[in-house]
Amino acid sequence: MLKSGLLSLKSGGKLLYCTCSIAPEENELVVNEILKKMENYSIIEIFKDFGVPGLNNVFGIDLIEDLKLSQRLYPHIHDTIGFYFCLIKKLN
Image (tube, rainbow, N blue to C red):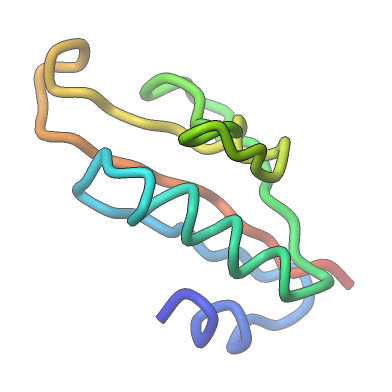
């Protein structure tokens, strides 16, 4: 689904990938796998700090450094269910 959404973007278009999960398998690992295979896309900073930075190392695996620009919300810190969001831009 993420790949299809990214392919539908025009140059300069943005897609916000969100899940209601804190599982890296549904979040950073998905974004990492897709962006490693697709050129011309970049993770961009979300200017408001809603949560804590995303993970760029999961289970001892180094991921795309820019995943730290994504954000996570944790139930015990942010008084909500778990969320993850990552803003991705299609470059020119």
